Image (spheres, one colour):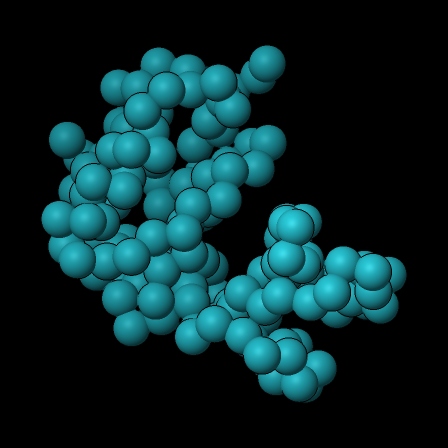
Length: 133
């Protein structure tokens, strides 16, 4: 497994970057997966109740999908290992301290946190403070 596993190194190297645009979570029927791939979601997760899509807000609006409130995505530029222990907990604790909800998506190279759009700048600041230790 590639990526950093040492928690102190991970936290010191977070480098949170606020991604442009707003995103939403939407759920659709999983039988129609092929139809929704054309929307180019940045994330998907299949649950018993349906298929969750993470996609740009304007795309969800154009497709007339019922969705969550607007979110912003903060990407940690550190290449974290999927086997790392404690990084998600530390980031969640930093955001909890600020009263900011967080939806974390771990991908192969980076972790991504979706926060309410209105809290995005405060969330980035909290994560930078965590990284500064």
